Length: 263
Picture 1: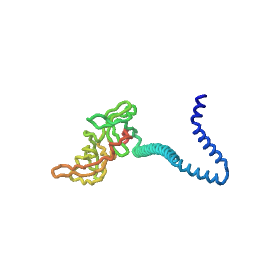
Picture 2: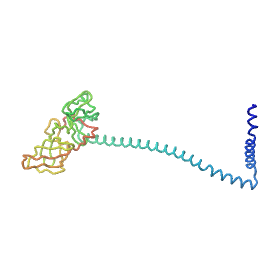
Picture 3: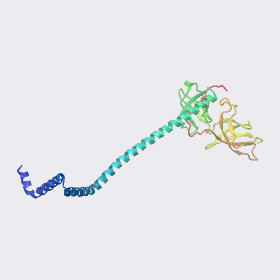
Picture 4: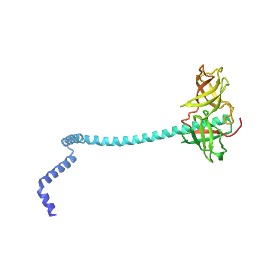
C-alpha cells in the first residue's frame, strides 16, 4: 500500500492531467450549450477520421471470412452438381439397357464390369455374374451399342469376357446392304478389318456391319459396327472392309450376357 501511495505521489502530474482530461470529457458530454455541441461535433468528426482505417481493416477481415464461406459453399455445390450429373448419366444408361433388353428379348442377363483383365496375352474384362446365374463359357456378351465379346472363363459369381479388341478374337459378320459375309478381326486402336469379301461385292463407306448368324455363339443381326474404308488392291484375291465397332471399349460398364437360344 505504501508503494502504491509513493507511486501516485511520484507521478502526480500525470494523474492530475489524466483526471482533468476525463473530467473535461464528462463535462462536455453532459453540456448542452451550442458552443459545446459544435465542439462535440468537430471532435466526433476527428474521431471518425482516426477510426476510419480501423473500420477499413475490420471490414477487410469480415469480407475475407465471407469470401471463404462462399468459396466453401461453391465447392460443395460443385461436388453436388457432379454427383447429380453422374446419377443422370447412370439413369440414362440403365434406361437404354432396359429398352434394349425389351426390344431384343428376355434372354439377356444384365451384368456390370467390375475390373479389367491384367493378362498381357488377352484383352478381357471381368463381370459380376457367373455360373450361379447360368453363365457358361462361349456365350455372347453385348452392350446397348453392339457386340462386346464372349465369355471364356466362368466362376460362381464372376466371369472373364474376351473382348473384340483382343488380337485372337474372330467374329463372323455380314455387310447389311449387300448381305456379303466375312470374318472381322481387330487390327489396331479402334480399327477392325473384315476379310474374305469377294471382289465383285459393292461396299459402301458407312454401311452397317451385323453378325451373320453363322455361329454357335452369336445370334444373327446384332449390331457390330460400320464400314469406314475399303482396301482393294489388284494383287488381292478378296476385298477388305476397314471398320469401326459401335462399342467404345474404353468405357465399358453395363453389359448383357446372352444366355438363351431364342433366336
